[in-house]
Image (tube, rainbow, N blue to C red; front, side):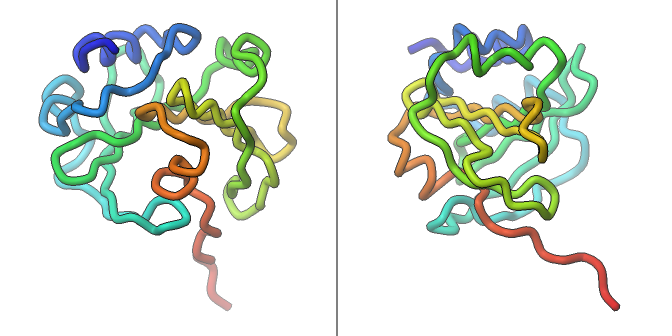
Length: 164
């Protein structure tokens, strides 16, 4: 497996076909030193069906239209979330058959099987409501499909923000 520094380079180049996974030893401090945090601190969240505690921060990356979102537990980066671009739309065809699919929520709409998960590559592709395009790319340490679902995936229905 490559080093964390090489991994950050690969993310900056948006090289998803060559992606072999986020190294398990990538430190949060190194990520926030490499990329500029958008705000002070982190935002807490629970990930996966096991609702495992984590925190995230948006990080500014030169050449990216929008910040990436990095998720951490303790001192380690466990997931990197990148907005997909036009160049990423044929990724499902280029990557081939996923290891599995999972449900997730796009805004407030549940998309059954809307996440294509490549657990052995440490990569998941999330689609839009019509499933006509890739909207997000999740990058993580290679794992099993079950482990990804238990500890990293975002299957939980978002809280309703509107009040009557």
